[in-house]
Length: 242
Image 1 (tube, rainbow, N blue to C red):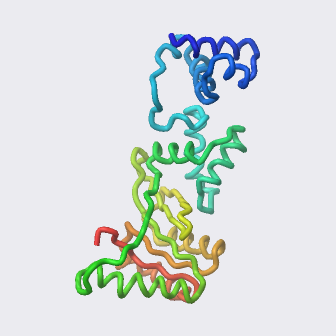
Image 2: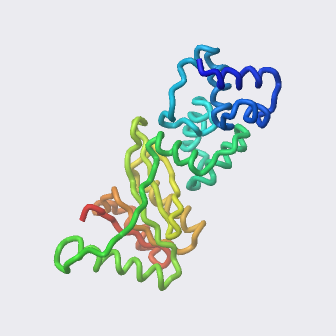
Image 3: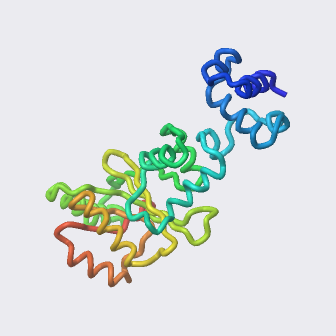
């Protein structure tokens, strides 16, 4: 058994503060907290089984049940707005009185399969290949419209969530690289996309969307809605592999 961790648990059981335990053992606060939670969950043997490094999803300051509660809340029917790392940190603080760092939130999102890589549309080489044609006739007009109408230009990806059957994730990235997300178990429905567009309009005003993972060719209802609201919202299909 790690003597320092055992000492940390004994000191915590004796009523010592986290600061006092850190000073006495030389361990970091997260290590002390993790050791004590392991002891609470499985006794001294649980500390014996402690491994170096973090497992996927660990280091967030939340128990597994708390993590699951936070994750399940992302699919709540009452959640009409997009969540971000900031809103997740706020909910963890409100529900569990736990302060999560941005890195801790990032680890949780990765463990849940909700991490969004940094998105960027790059000007392709050439002029006649499909990628260049898409950039010239779809993306550039969208970007020009966004600039002219002072609209926010959002890049996004729609995809399934690994390990969560029937659930889909729409992740968006703002020009400031802030990431937003929304989960649904009703994908793919045009009405859900219309509701998403309406929510974004209410929050940002004019909106330009470039989304991957969609096939808009047969989305008659959605396209009718987009045509009726073309003064305030534009949407194009994005194929990053082009």
